Image (cartoon, helix red, strand yellow):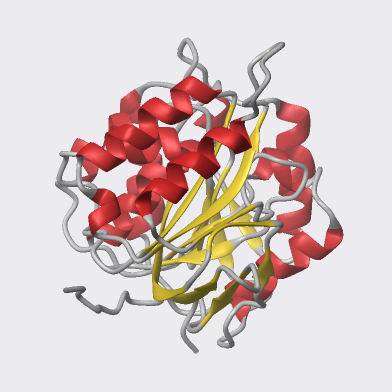
Length: 304
């Protein structure tokens, strides 16, 4: 039996709205940050702390700095949306601190990769968010992808459907779209920061993980009972995941694993670490049609 539930959509943005840029994970390249900042700043009133450029080893400053920045962005009512500078690693280190900040009014949070941890935390609180480009990626993406992001943030209409390349298991499934980067999703298994996946369409993508590591993480999901809970699987980009000189591909491994679940599964959605990273609303109800290879959104990312 599956459980249907609704996630709260944050209020829509309007051009000129005040938004925050934060760096809750890894340190980042200044030039690519400035490129993305210019694109977002041309549409919204962007604010960020000068300390965003701090570095502590591989992180964008200390846990205290990153947590204070994130909490301020989430709690300040003047901030209407939140953009992440980069993924990398570090957001999971903030989850215990975030658990203590109390109720958070819904507002769009945009990011992917390590930001998956923050998305899952928001969905554990019943709030939608946007799996989409970080600032350091934004300037490298097609103009159509950037316009799709602004449309998701500003329009109370559902996002345009996405089309994938391969059917791994036929069938149709509906449910809230949940997930993100596979390696981050598995790290939250057994923690209070993972939302219930019962009845969900599970979105997975990743980068730089060799096929045996994809197998290991997928098997972790299987052992945790995830594939007995979700209704379908939507696979995005698995970038730089090939084994050198192997006679099999990452896609071969993922297809075999997906077929073992028996769940409708489509691969090759343009979501993740590839050359295109189409933004999608997490927590919004979606329809996965594995025969047509489409992911159709039944709810908008924001509320009017």
